[in-house]
Image (cartoon, rainbow, N blue to C red; front, side):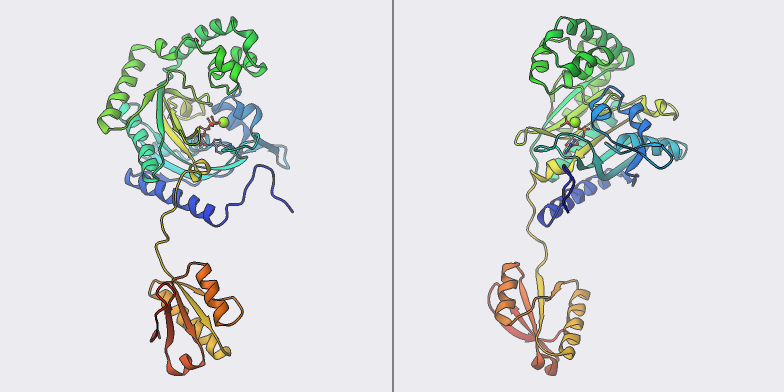
Length: 400
Ligand code: ATP
Ligand code: MG
């Protein structure tokens, strides 16, 4: 039996890295007083068509889509924001408080070509803020992601941009369409289609020729209205005040349609890939049937971060309990292990067979700090032999 292409087992150190990243993110999110929401992995296909956007790569090509026995169109979720918004509306969270801050964690699924940094199942940790339109929320959210990345010791460049409001986008899309008309011969077939339905998508194309073709394209930042410009300037000023370094990238559009105003990406120079991305989506709640609610969020890509983090030294020494003898000795060893654990020690009762030499070699190879040897003599004396495998020192001690 084999695993499915693009899906992975996270074993040993990889699982530890996953947990390390999750714990660090949760630690920071807790300081910012976010609450966890645990969301389903399967949603109706329509949720993503209406939020992420029909013309996006995610919806057009990347969804794991299937029908259930009743013919309902379902998908394995490709991202978390749409689900969080659905849950926010469905559970009327807006009725409970003037604003809501949620975070989620879990697997996402996209039918992409598997390659470095691109899997079909990957994990995201995301944060969403509902109910605040003012720019201090943008700055604080970006700072939250920045704090997580710093806690992980991951070096990134933060790029930011503003996509303006609906009206700005409309005017800009028109200008971009006009510009792209002249460049048709250089665009990939996908972008020729995108150009009509959603020209901003062309700026996000990873195809070299399309990148070249859009080099001198008009910039969204030249199409911002006074309010959007003011919002963007204020976000930048707050970031400066918080000491968060950033660069402006007026071509940054993100791969999802729901964004308005602030968008941002943290990119690792070492990987050449984005490890965290997000932005504002002030109309999405309303578009999905909720009350008008400004909102914003980000998602961290856990697997990409796993490539960058270094695990800290294991915080605890392992006690390796080795019984030699009959069932009575094993009963004693089980109780010794139990007593040590009750003292808060990390204990491994040996399941390895063989003599003392083999046991100690194994303990050494596994990096265990102490051997706790339990034999007939120890049982009779009510003691154990504690051997420090680092120093070689050995003495009899009482555990129970
Ligand atoms: P990219 O431009 O790299 O395709 P994206 O815009 O599709 O990224 P988002 O939807 O914003 O990415 O997801 C947020 C983060 O999730 C990304 O920055 C990345 O770290 C991670 N991510 C996205 N797709 C994948 C994938 N297929 N495999 C692993 N991680 C991914
Ligand atoms: Mg993508």
